[in-house]
Image (cartoon, rainbow, N blue to C red; front, side, top):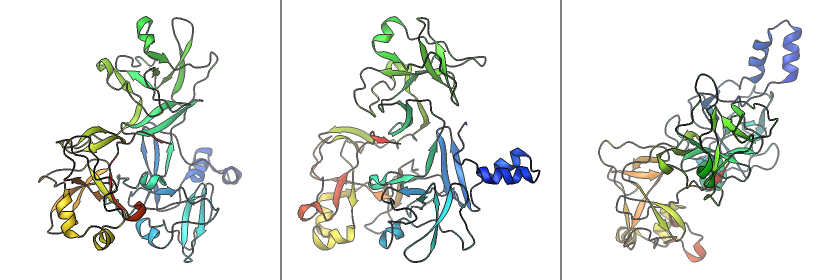
Length: 380
Protein backbone atom coordinates (compact mmCIF):
# COMPACT_ATOMS: atom_id res chain seq x y z
CA UNK A 1 0.00 0.00 0.00
CA UNK A 2 1.19 3.50 -0.78
CA UNK A 3 1.13 6.44 1.57
CA UNK A 4 2.73 9.81 2.07
CA UNK A 5 4.97 10.51 5.01
CA UNK A 6 3.19 12.48 7.70
CA UNK A 7 6.40 13.67 9.35
CA UNK A 8 8.61 16.16 7.50
CA UNK A 9 12.30 16.51 8.31
CA UNK A 10 13.96 19.17 10.41
CA UNK A 11 16.37 21.23 8.34
CA UNK A 12 18.61 21.94 11.31
CA UNK A 13 18.95 18.28 12.21
CA UNK A 14 19.72 17.46 8.59
CA UNK A 15 22.46 20.08 8.34
CA UNK A 16 24.07 18.90 11.57
CA UNK A 17 23.99 15.34 10.33
CA UNK A 18 25.57 16.30 7.02
CA UNK A 19 28.27 18.23 8.82
CA UNK A 20 29.06 15.11 10.82
CA UNK A 21 29.35 13.07 7.65
CA UNK A 22 26.09 11.12 8.17
CA UNK A 23 24.52 9.85 4.90
CA UNK A 24 21.54 11.93 3.73
CA UNK A 25 19.12 8.96 3.97
CA UNK A 26 20.11 8.30 7.59
CA UNK A 27 19.82 12.00 8.44
CA UNK A 28 16.33 12.24 6.97
CA UNK A 29 15.23 9.11 8.80
CA UNK A 30 16.41 10.56 12.10
CA UNK A 31 14.73 13.90 11.39
CA UNK A 32 11.36 12.37 10.52
CA UNK A 33 11.24 9.70 13.22
CA UNK A 34 8.48 10.15 15.84
CA UNK A 35 9.46 10.14 19.51
CA UNK A 36 10.06 6.81 21.22
CA UNK A 37 6.81 5.04 22.05
CA UNK A 38 4.85 6.62 19.19
CA UNK A 39 4.26 4.89 15.89
CA UNK A 40 2.04 5.03 12.84
CA UNK A 41 -0.36 2.80 10.94
CA UNK A 42 -0.13 3.25 7.18
CA UNK A 43 -2.96 2.65 4.74
CA UNK A 44 -3.57 3.50 1.09
CA UNK A 45 -5.29 6.72 2.26
CA UNK A 46 -2.55 8.02 4.53
CA UNK A 47 -1.02 7.58 7.93
CA UNK A 48 -2.61 7.25 11.40
CA UNK A 49 -0.63 8.07 14.53
CA UNK A 50 -0.67 5.41 17.26
CA UNK A 51 0.86 4.83 20.68
CA UNK A 52 3.33 2.08 21.56
CA UNK A 53 0.52 -0.52 21.74
CA UNK A 54 -0.88 0.48 18.36
CA UNK A 55 -3.87 2.30 19.85
CA UNK A 56 -5.24 5.20 17.78
CA UNK A 57 -4.39 8.76 18.75
CA UNK A 58 -6.79 11.71 18.45
CA UNK A 59 -6.93 15.50 18.34
CA UNK A 60 -9.61 17.73 19.87
CA UNK A 61 -11.20 20.65 18.01
CA UNK A 62 -11.51 22.68 21.23
CA UNK A 63 -7.72 22.73 21.67
CA UNK A 64 -7.35 26.20 20.17
CA UNK A 65 -5.00 27.78 22.73
CA UNK A 66 -1.32 27.14 21.88
CA UNK A 67 0.46 24.95 24.39
CA UNK A 68 -2.71 24.08 26.35
CA UNK A 69 -5.31 21.31 26.53
CA UNK A 70 -9.05 21.99 26.82
CA UNK A 71 -9.72 18.39 27.91
CA UNK A 72 -9.35 18.11 31.67
CA UNK A 73 -11.19 16.49 34.59
CA UNK A 74 -13.89 14.04 33.47
CA UNK A 75 -13.00 14.69 29.83
CA UNK A 76 -9.50 13.30 30.41
CA UNK A 77 -10.98 10.09 31.85
CA UNK A 78 -12.70 9.34 28.54
CA UNK A 79 -9.86 10.84 26.50
CA UNK A 80 -6.58 10.02 28.30
CA UNK A 81 -3.76 12.40 27.27
CA UNK A 82 -0.73 10.81 25.59
CA UNK A 83 1.92 11.23 28.31
CA UNK A 84 5.35 12.64 27.51
CA UNK A 85 8.26 11.52 29.72
CA UNK A 86 10.14 14.02 31.88
CA UNK A 87 13.13 14.04 29.51
CA UNK A 88 11.00 14.65 26.38
CA UNK A 89 11.67 17.81 24.39
CA UNK A 90 10.36 19.44 21.23
CA UNK A 91 11.72 18.13 17.93
CA UNK A 92 10.47 19.04 14.47
CA UNK A 93 6.67 18.86 14.43
CA UNK A 94 6.57 17.28 17.88
CA UNK A 95 6.24 19.34 21.06
CA UNK A 96 5.37 18.90 24.74
CA UNK A 97 2.69 20.80 26.64
CA UNK A 98 2.14 21.05 30.38
CA UNK A 99 -1.41 20.24 31.46
CA UNK A 100 -3.49 21.87 34.23
CA UNK A 101 -2.49 19.11 36.67
CA UNK A 102 1.20 19.59 35.90
CA UNK A 103 1.65 16.44 33.81
CA UNK A 104 3.27 16.52 30.38
CA UNK A 105 1.56 15.60 27.12
CA UNK A 106 2.77 15.06 23.56
CA UNK A 107 1.49 17.33 20.80
CA UNK A 108 1.88 16.94 17.02
CA UNK A 109 1.83 20.02 14.79
CA UNK A 110 0.68 21.98 17.83
CA UNK A 111 -2.31 19.72 18.59
CA UNK A 112 -2.27 17.73 21.86
CA UNK A 113 -2.73 13.98 21.38
CA UNK A 114 -5.16 11.70 23.22
CA UNK A 115 -6.36 8.10 23.34
CA UNK A 116 -10.00 6.99 23.59
CA UNK A 117 -11.00 4.88 26.58
CA UNK A 118 -13.47 2.78 24.54
CA UNK A 119 -10.88 1.62 22.01
CA UNK A 120 -10.33 -1.95 23.17
CA UNK A 121 -7.76 -3.15 20.65
CA UNK A 122 -5.17 -1.84 18.17
CA UNK A 123 -6.46 -0.79 14.78
CA UNK A 124 -9.82 0.46 16.02
CA UNK A 125 -10.71 4.16 16.06
CA UNK A 126 -14.13 4.35 17.73
CA UNK A 127 -13.41 7.91 18.86
CA UNK A 128 -13.13 9.29 15.34
CA UNK A 129 -15.72 12.10 14.94
CA UNK A 130 -17.29 11.58 18.34
CA UNK A 131 -19.20 14.75 19.18
CA UNK A 132 -18.00 16.26 15.87
CA UNK A 133 -14.97 17.51 17.84
CA UNK A 134 -12.68 14.50 18.02
CA UNK A 135 -10.69 13.34 15.01
CA UNK A 136 -8.25 10.51 14.62
CA UNK A 137 -4.73 11.92 14.10
CA UNK A 138 -4.46 11.30 10.37
CA UNK A 139 -2.35 12.70 7.53
CA UNK A 140 -3.61 11.98 3.99
CA UNK A 141 -1.60 10.96 0.95
CA UNK A 142 -0.37 13.63 -1.45
CA UNK A 143 -3.32 15.27 -3.23
CA UNK A 144 -3.54 17.07 -6.55
CA UNK A 145 -4.56 20.76 -6.53
CA UNK A 146 -8.32 21.12 -6.10
CA UNK A 147 -8.86 17.65 -4.60
CA UNK A 148 -9.24 16.24 -1.12
CA UNK A 149 -10.24 13.25 0.98
CA UNK A 150 -13.66 12.96 2.58
CA UNK A 151 -14.70 10.46 5.25
CA UNK A 152 -18.06 8.94 4.26
CA UNK A 153 -19.93 5.73 5.05
CA UNK A 154 -18.05 4.20 2.09
CA UNK A 155 -14.66 5.01 3.61
CA UNK A 156 -12.09 7.71 2.82
CA UNK A 157 -13.06 8.87 -0.66
CA UNK A 158 -11.36 11.23 -3.10
CA UNK A 159 -13.37 14.41 -3.76
CA UNK A 160 -13.07 17.59 -5.81
CA UNK A 161 -12.68 21.12 -4.41
CA UNK A 162 -16.44 21.28 -3.60
CA UNK A 163 -16.36 18.03 -1.66
CA UNK A 164 -18.16 16.10 -4.41
CA UNK A 165 -17.34 12.41 -4.72
CA UNK A 166 -14.91 11.25 -7.39
CA UNK A 167 -15.40 7.93 -9.18
CA UNK A 168 -13.47 5.43 -11.26
CA UNK A 169 -14.53 2.47 -13.39
CA UNK A 170 -13.78 -1.21 -12.84
CA UNK A 171 -12.76 -1.52 -16.49
CA UNK A 172 -10.31 1.41 -16.44
CA UNK A 173 -7.19 0.11 -14.75
CA UNK A 174 -3.57 0.74 -15.69
CA UNK A 175 -1.63 -1.88 -17.63
CA UNK A 176 2.05 -2.25 -18.44
CA UNK A 177 2.85 0.73 -16.26
CA UNK A 178 0.67 3.10 -18.30
CA UNK A 179 -2.49 4.96 -17.25
CA UNK A 180 -5.76 3.46 -18.44
CA UNK A 181 -7.35 5.02 -21.51
CA UNK A 182 -10.63 6.77 -20.57
CA UNK A 183 -13.57 4.74 -21.92
CA UNK A 184 -16.35 7.14 -20.95
CA UNK A 185 -17.32 8.98 -24.15
CA UNK A 186 -20.36 10.28 -26.03
CA UNK A 187 -23.58 9.33 -24.15
CA UNK A 188 -21.59 8.35 -21.07
CA UNK A 189 -20.49 11.99 -20.71
CA UNK A 190 -24.11 13.06 -20.20
CA UNK A 191 -23.94 11.48 -16.73
CA UNK A 192 -20.23 11.47 -15.93
CA UNK A 193 -17.81 14.40 -16.08
CA UNK A 194 -14.05 13.79 -16.37
CA UNK A 195 -12.06 15.48 -13.60
CA UNK A 196 -10.28 18.19 -15.55
CA UNK A 197 -6.52 18.51 -15.22
CA UNK A 198 -4.41 21.49 -16.38
CA UNK A 199 -3.09 21.11 -19.92
CA UNK A 200 0.44 21.53 -18.59
CA UNK A 201 -0.26 19.76 -15.31
CA UNK A 202 2.51 17.75 -13.67
CA UNK A 203 2.49 14.52 -11.69
CA UNK A 204 1.71 14.96 -7.98
CA UNK A 205 2.48 11.80 -6.03
CA UNK A 206 0.21 9.13 -7.51
CA UNK A 207 -1.71 11.74 -9.51
CA UNK A 208 -1.02 12.30 -13.21
CA UNK A 209 -2.92 13.91 -16.14
CA UNK A 210 -3.93 11.79 -19.14
CA UNK A 211 -4.99 13.05 -22.57
CA UNK A 212 -8.50 12.32 -23.79
CA UNK A 213 -9.40 11.83 -27.46
CA UNK A 214 -10.97 15.31 -27.60
CA UNK A 215 -7.66 16.89 -26.56
CA UNK A 216 -8.65 17.75 -22.98
CA UNK A 217 -6.69 16.50 -19.99
CA UNK A 218 -8.11 14.36 -17.18
CA UNK A 219 -6.68 13.54 -13.76
CA UNK A 220 -5.83 9.94 -12.93
CA UNK A 221 -4.94 8.44 -9.57
CA UNK A 222 -2.60 5.44 -9.69
CA UNK A 223 -3.35 5.33 -13.41
CA UNK A 224 -7.16 5.26 -13.04
CA UNK A 225 -9.13 8.11 -14.70
CA UNK A 226 -11.38 10.06 -12.30
CA UNK A 227 -14.91 11.35 -12.89
CA UNK A 228 -17.74 13.28 -11.23
CA UNK A 229 -21.39 12.23 -11.40
CA UNK A 230 -23.85 14.94 -12.41
CA UNK A 231 -26.56 13.55 -10.10
CA UNK A 232 -24.45 14.18 -6.99
CA UNK A 233 -25.79 17.59 -5.95
CA UNK A 234 -24.32 17.87 -2.45
CA UNK A 235 -20.91 17.19 -0.91
CA UNK A 236 -20.69 13.63 0.39
CA UNK A 237 -23.38 12.18 -1.90
CA UNK A 238 -22.38 9.01 -3.74
CA UNK A 239 -25.28 8.20 -6.05
CA UNK A 240 -22.88 6.72 -8.57
CA UNK A 241 -21.64 3.91 -6.32
CA UNK A 242 -22.30 0.60 -8.11
CA UNK A 243 -24.04 2.12 -11.15
CA UNK A 244 -24.05 -0.38 -14.05
CA UNK A 245 -21.97 -2.68 -11.87
CA UNK A 246 -18.93 -0.74 -13.08
CA UNK A 247 -18.72 2.63 -11.34
CA UNK A 248 -17.21 2.89 -7.85
CA UNK A 249 -16.55 5.79 -5.53
CA UNK A 250 -12.79 6.39 -5.53
CA UNK A 251 -12.27 5.11 -1.99
CA UNK A 252 -8.61 4.82 -1.07
CA UNK A 253 -9.59 3.11 2.17
CA UNK A 254 -12.90 1.25 2.09
CA UNK A 255 -15.02 1.12 5.23
CA UNK A 256 -15.34 -2.40 6.67
CA UNK A 257 -18.48 -4.30 5.59
CA UNK A 258 -21.41 -3.72 7.93
CA UNK A 259 -22.57 -6.60 10.13
CA UNK A 260 -25.18 -8.66 8.28
CA UNK A 261 -28.02 -7.81 10.69
CA UNK A 262 -27.77 -4.05 9.97
CA UNK A 263 -29.91 -2.16 7.46
CA UNK A 264 -30.15 1.47 6.37
CA UNK A 265 -33.50 3.27 6.33
CA UNK A 266 -34.67 6.68 5.10
CA UNK A 267 -36.16 8.88 7.81
CA UNK A 268 -37.24 12.51 8.14
CA UNK A 269 -33.79 13.30 9.55
CA UNK A 270 -31.96 11.50 6.73
CA UNK A 271 -30.64 7.97 6.49
CA UNK A 272 -30.37 6.08 9.78
CA UNK A 273 -29.02 2.68 10.75
CA UNK A 274 -31.61 0.06 11.67
CA UNK A 275 -31.88 -3.61 12.55
CA UNK A 276 -32.85 -6.38 10.14
CA UNK A 277 -36.56 -5.50 10.55
CA UNK A 278 -35.87 -1.85 9.70
CA UNK A 279 -36.32 -0.54 13.26
CA UNK A 280 -34.18 2.53 13.93
CA UNK A 281 -31.16 2.09 16.19
CA UNK A 282 -30.41 4.51 19.03
CA UNK A 283 -27.59 5.17 21.46
CA UNK A 284 -27.72 6.98 24.79
CA UNK A 285 -26.30 10.50 24.86
CA UNK A 286 -25.01 11.45 28.29
CA UNK A 287 -25.13 9.28 31.40
CA UNK A 288 -27.51 6.31 31.52
CA UNK A 289 -27.33 6.38 35.33
CA UNK A 290 -28.44 10.02 35.35
CA UNK A 291 -31.34 9.20 33.04
CA UNK A 292 -32.39 6.36 35.37
CA UNK A 293 -32.38 8.70 38.35
CA UNK A 294 -34.16 11.64 36.73
CA UNK A 295 -36.29 10.95 33.65
CA UNK A 296 -36.63 7.23 32.84
CA UNK A 297 -36.16 4.60 35.58
CA UNK A 298 -35.51 0.89 35.05
CA UNK A 299 -39.23 0.15 34.55
CA UNK A 300 -39.44 2.92 31.95
CA UNK A 301 -36.38 1.59 30.13
CA UNK A 302 -37.77 -1.96 30.14
CA UNK A 303 -41.08 -0.73 28.73
CA UNK A 304 -39.72 1.36 25.87
CA UNK A 305 -36.21 0.20 24.97
CA UNK A 306 -34.71 -3.06 23.70
CA UNK A 307 -30.98 -3.75 23.55
CA UNK A 308 -29.80 -5.55 20.41
CA UNK A 309 -28.34 -8.94 21.42
CA UNK A 310 -25.23 -10.29 19.71
CA UNK A 311 -25.51 -13.82 18.37
CA UNK A 312 -22.96 -16.37 19.62
CA UNK A 313 -19.79 -16.11 17.56
CA UNK A 314 -20.70 -12.70 16.11
CA UNK A 315 -17.74 -10.44 15.25
CA UNK A 316 -17.63 -6.66 15.30
CA UNK A 317 -16.62 -4.55 12.30
CA UNK A 318 -15.39 -0.95 12.21
CA UNK A 319 -17.54 1.27 14.44
CA UNK A 320 -19.79 -1.70 15.32
CA UNK A 321 -18.55 -3.74 18.28
CA UNK A 322 -19.89 -6.14 20.88
CA UNK A 323 -19.93 -5.12 24.57
CA UNK A 324 -21.35 -6.33 27.85
CA UNK A 325 -24.99 -5.40 28.37
CA UNK A 326 -25.56 -2.33 30.61
CA UNK A 327 -28.53 -4.27 32.03
CA UNK A 328 -26.11 -6.74 33.60
CA UNK A 329 -26.29 -10.52 33.59
CA UNK A 330 -23.23 -10.95 31.40
CA UNK A 331 -25.19 -10.75 28.12
CA UNK A 332 -23.37 -9.46 25.03
CA UNK A 333 -25.02 -6.73 22.96
CA UNK A 334 -24.18 -4.66 19.90
CA UNK A 335 -22.68 -1.20 20.24
CA UNK A 336 -21.91 1.73 17.96
CA UNK A 337 -18.63 3.52 18.80
CA UNK A 338 -18.62 1.66 22.10
CA UNK A 339 -22.17 2.72 23.05
CA UNK A 340 -24.84 -0.05 23.30
CA UNK A 341 -27.60 0.30 20.70
CA UNK A 342 -31.34 0.01 21.31
CA UNK A 343 -34.60 -0.12 19.38
CA UNK A 344 -37.66 1.83 20.58
CA UNK A 345 -40.88 -0.11 21.21
CA UNK A 346 -43.03 2.71 19.81
CA UNK A 347 -41.32 2.64 16.41
CA UNK A 348 -43.86 0.60 14.43
CA UNK A 349 -42.06 0.40 11.11
CA UNK A 350 -38.94 1.23 9.08
CA UNK A 351 -37.82 4.85 9.11
CA UNK A 352 -39.71 5.80 12.29
CA UNK A 353 -37.70 7.81 14.85
CA UNK A 354 -40.20 8.19 17.69
CA UNK A 355 -37.45 7.70 20.26
CA UNK A 356 -35.38 10.74 19.25
CA UNK A 357 -34.28 12.57 22.41
CA UNK A 358 -36.52 10.33 24.56
CA UNK A 359 -35.87 11.02 28.28
CA UNK A 360 -33.66 14.01 27.41
CA UNK A 361 -35.18 16.10 30.17
CA UNK A 362 -36.31 19.72 30.05
CA UNK A 363 -34.88 21.46 27.00
CA UNK A 364 -33.19 18.27 25.82
CA UNK A 365 -30.16 18.97 27.99
CA UNK A 366 -30.15 15.74 29.96
CA UNK A 367 -28.92 13.34 27.29
CA UNK A 368 -31.50 10.77 26.26
CA UNK A 369 -31.65 8.42 23.28
CA UNK A 370 -30.62 9.61 19.82
CA UNK A 371 -30.80 7.82 16.43
CA UNK A 372 -27.60 6.52 14.81
CA UNK A 373 -27.28 8.40 11.47
CA UNK A 374 -25.50 7.03 8.46
CA UNK A 375 -22.36 9.13 8.12
CA UNK A 376 -22.01 10.96 4.82
CA UNK A 377 -21.00 14.55 5.50
CA UNK A 378 -17.74 14.37 7.44
CA UNK A 379 -14.90 16.10 5.64
CA UNK A 380 -11.18 15.98 6.30
